[in-house]
Image (tube, rainbow, N blue to C red; front, top):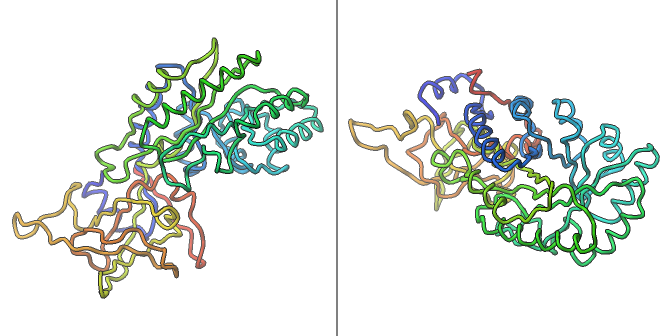
Length: 397
């Protein structure tokens, strides 16, 4: 992914910074549109993965919708010219102000997660003399086989309407005159690599569809959420997720009614691989059991390792040529050592990786933390009163 020319240009930029390869992003979007288009599926981009303006402009150019989980994300989508009729608003805790914002912008759909939320949206829509399109987010009790913090489709999770309360909720919706039931919404988790989880979701959706059909309730839209994972361990081998297999699975196993439309909410799988956090080694510190490579980037720039114990591939760009480890003394490879790669934040959890194999690393070396295009910049903070870092793009360097 990184050529010698790019690396030499990095040396003139203040670290740390986010680097976005826009060619990778465009290739990913082209593949996404091709494979989803085979079946007439409609994809909403999940802004929570990455809300960088240039990234959003490119995604919008491929005519994706927007999946939002806050009022500010709804505002951002509108500002970036996503069509309101393609904006969906999810989230287990929508405030009155956020709901009013979405109503004022005439968005396509609220994905609703509780009876009380439905009642609040109905009351607010009544005050504005509007009808709100809603989808019931149903908790399908399907295991996503992913990290417990990003599993959302089990009864023990806070998300969605449980199957055992569905009848009560549906009967209530019939009495809420300013709501229009236009869909069902499902989302079982994030960073899902076992596609059998999606097959299980399809089978459960089919069962729930039958429940509505028996009661002669017509459902126009089925939103199956997102959650498709990416390869953090070998990003160059799998830069673009296998959208062909992913969308075909839903086509093969979802049993749709006539004229039903299928919606997806993908975020990580679109933006993760186009982004990298570039940092610099401040110090190399010898420890009792390990050596530490201390970077100028920390958990304030990439929270996932501290939050989820997530893996990101770490590369020493200063010891690479054309994407490969540089050789020395003719054909001899550089000596490899193990380092705990850590940041400067005053927390022991500020660690990007333990016992990471790297060529001998020195103060001033450039380090790449790969696959940081999703849940990287968007989760950054100013903890320890750190400066917010900048983003740079492949077409500008």
